[in-house]
Amino acid sequence: MAVRPPTLREKRRYVLARIDPEGVQVDPKDLYYAMYEAVVSLFGDLVAAAMQPSVIGIESGCALFRCRRGTERELMIALSTLGACREVPVALRILAVSGTLESLRERIAAFQEKWHEVPVPAADQLSGSDGVSPLPPGPESPAADGAVSTGTEYQFGGAPVGIVTRRGHKADVIEKGFKNTRRLYLTTEDLEILHATTIPDGI
Amino acid sequence: MKITDACVVPYPVGDSSVSRLALEARSLGFDSIVALDAQVQSVCGIDVIPGIYVSGLPAKDVQNRAKKCRGTGTVVSVQAGDNGFIRTVANTRGVHILRGIYAADKHAFDHVTAKIAADNNTAIDIDLAPVIFGRGHQRQKAIHRYLDVMVLERRFEFPLTISTSARSVLGMRAVREMTGLCSLFGMDETGVQAALAGVARVTAPEENPVRVI
Image (cartoon, rainbow over all chains, first blue to last red):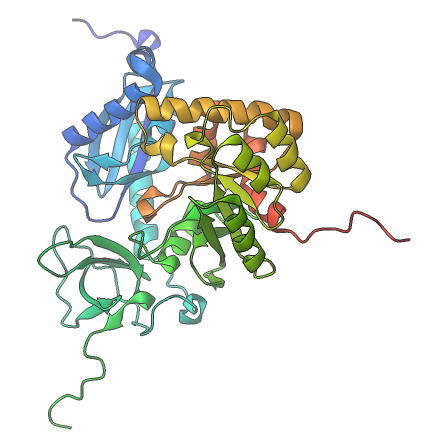
């Protein structure tokens, strides 16, 4: 089939969205099915057919979506109703809309730089949170699966937890245990160092 | 004008701490959040307003709870019930927000209750959780109820609030996303901004109706 000349081609729009929580692994195919289900359940088959939504790919924790020009608003509304991808809770935070993929990839690079140099708020700004022991904010330490071994053990709400990702003051942890382990979204101020009062040997 | 998410549910009911919810709210464009069973605090410039949610209690008990919370700065939200219950609660001083209109009886919120809510400065909450996470009949019913609320709001001008009822940071939505979701039931951008400022409106101290000169 001959390629149409540019003036006869359909105009497209590309949507860039960050995948939350950080470090979660999402398959583009699963994301496509979740996105398509969100579009169809909210707007129906007619709008979905006109929109022609698709997932271009997932790059650096961001998802790239494509739709026809003029339907990007509907796509963004549908994306905000997406709460899980193959029963994994996720949220898509829309960052940008563009007419070319190239400019969105530039945006991804710009966002990556911004995230790496995210300023850490002063410790006194987080006073009043329900945490006790302030933890010095560490560098970004994302992990795709499982807890990050930092040498220090933490607890929250009386239960031991393992840190999954940490960026600035944000810390995602997983409860340690045999059952009822769930991912908790905390700040470093909320975490208490386990055995913090234990006097080490040798003193 | 404060941009407020009218209800978030922190740990232990939810999976996110109050400070994390506040941090997330800041990145999503909010100035303040109403967190259930939390303490008054400010996290990175985000005001955390304590709130209580009363559900499943008779009107008399609701009045007692509202009386106890008066003057403490707590936002009192009440689960909507039948028509008589809503009329009584909307008339109760100290009740700020009526929530769960989407799940109430079809005729529970009518023009009379709308007038009472407008007269008593009681807000009606637009809970976006059934629109975001609901599917099929549940979401259709919620959108239909909110369409009806919008018709009455244009006529009687009672306050509105918008909430996500997020139990997790993943359930929170940005102001722009809320604007898009609210456009599904005919709320324009100005209306969304007014509704996001609804908590400040209903918690503002009452002015004396009689002005002494």
